Length: 430
Ligand SMILES: [Zn+2]
Image 1 (cartoon, rainbow, N blue to C red):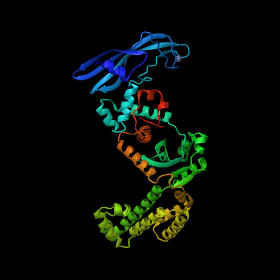
Image 2 (image 1 turned 120 degrees about the horizontal axis):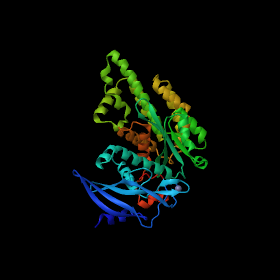
Image 3 (image 1 turned 90 degrees about the vertical axis):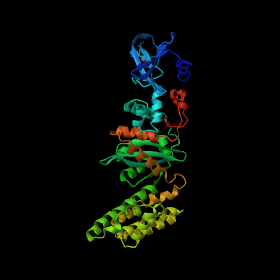
Image 4 (image 1 turned 90 degrees about the horizontal axis):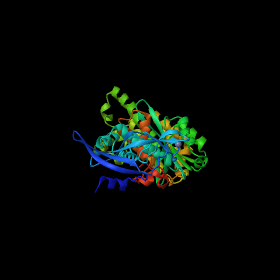
């Protein structure tokens, strides 16, 4: 079987033919070069206006990198024509295997982007003997394609969160769609300010915005303001994940303050290695940590009291009715305010301030699942952590969209790539 036969089967271009394929050996480095020529009667298309135009001249041969075969690099070689276009002037023709000045073929870009979902960008470039820049460009192309072709109709539930992407308090705001059956990253904002979140809502049509019924966020003031302003009709939920995160931070603060104090009094042995005993749920502790926790509970330590208050609060989430949950919340806040544990008192005060938003959790029950934002957030953190090479915000954004933009994975056929409408699932990055 000839190479040309295979290529005509998988990558057939109507107005072009594969004329010859040759293998080049440069000191043991094998390369396949496949020459492409226009069909005798094929007239060039202007890349400016996509119309058939009369030819003008031909440029020097150009090489386009294609998907490697058996570990051998494959290049298409083609001598581009220029057209004389009455609208665009003398312009380079459009070819179906690549666009713009990119020397990667479209198929190869999708191929690299697909692998970059499984391997780090560094690994992809190493395995396929290409540069990190090429992998980055391929992923970026896939992301843009996905963003342009995604469908936001039926958007009902949003989750808003932030993550730190670099040292020195550099945050990004992430907006997720968190409906059953469709959980994906919709948008990334540069900061965590009102302006950055407002930027997301400005990308939505009025209809889409009016269709949002639930939104989930933490207690970050700028987010609360923008949500109230932009989607006042939606039920706003302060969700379990964010509240327990705040509570854990407070428990840890109490412990740290106490460690400092007992150190001065010479009791540091008791609190040593206690951090995770106090932060984990009891059922997740190791045997050794359980023994440690038992020992800790014997002392009337502030850390222990903070721990017990947090554990007690877990019962809150088991209520069914907002009314009873509200009673529990008020009672818990009263007790905590008397506790003299300053960090927890702060949490209680802010829970009181946001009482109705917290009780919305029970009103939205069954519509948005509890762990969704947490799950997406963990994946986002993993993506930024894995990405040692990401120094710029642009890289971080591309990586996050690529990893979290769509859940389903399906390889695109050549037809899908040319005609985005046949892609069934909204933001498909593959
Ligand atoms: Zn034109």
